[in-house]
Picture 1: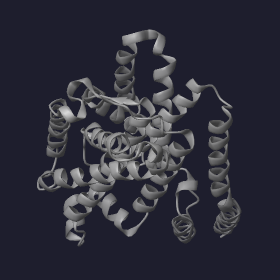
Picture 2: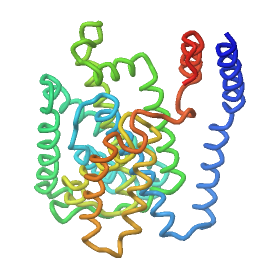
Picture 3: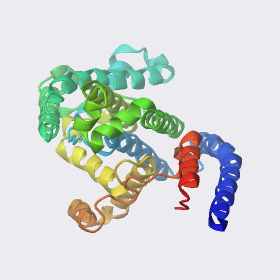
Length: 343
């Protein structure tokens, strides 16, 4: 009886602490956005450091989007670089060939959104045949898709063919990258903790049982895949306007492998894991740059070691409390209180 009262008291304290901390996340977001604006406007950081921060942000978007498929839904996609390429080329085409030059900066958000939308439409086309099958076939289809996109771009002269496409202004800035990172975290967090997200998680646990419980697994898979493709396209659009030059080789199987490493390094089924995985991997690549080509050997070796000693990654299936909706935290607390479980 005393133990149960102690648990109830602990839960009450946690509940109060959680309610007091609700304002903290919006305040931090506002602070970091203002900091990004100040850094960009007044060059408070070295341009190289700003570039690395933008790469970190773009990789967070890519990792989150792939984690939705591989981590939360339990499928295995390996062609994310293809969707990134679609977004990159569509956004670049719009800012270079369609939008007036003097309005390109103002219309840049529209170009990024169009890049994401184009990637989402291609994702829809890929998803229909892919999800008619189960198991590892999605990996084969997405791998083939990535190769098709690369080969197609190499043979389209209007996009520069194998030489690449250039002429974009440096429109991706730290505030814009931060904005899209916040948007992707917000969208994917709300999606995975919604009723639709329960369907996504149920597919990962047991697709047949999920089907029997009236979850339209095919529809859920397709929608999740389209959302994932959209954010990959957004990341591609931002990436193109950081580099100001893209070519098909930038979106080959090595790029898809990089995104996979970031997902499994940070941990499957975790927003915090995606952020950690993308940040650690991007920074490590820069730190190891003096090693030259050998760093590309070291990083896959790191993945192998991770699979051997921590297969779920750093945050596998765990989440920072900030990313969990209050109603879910309270529901968990009530369940523990009812069952007398303090863990």
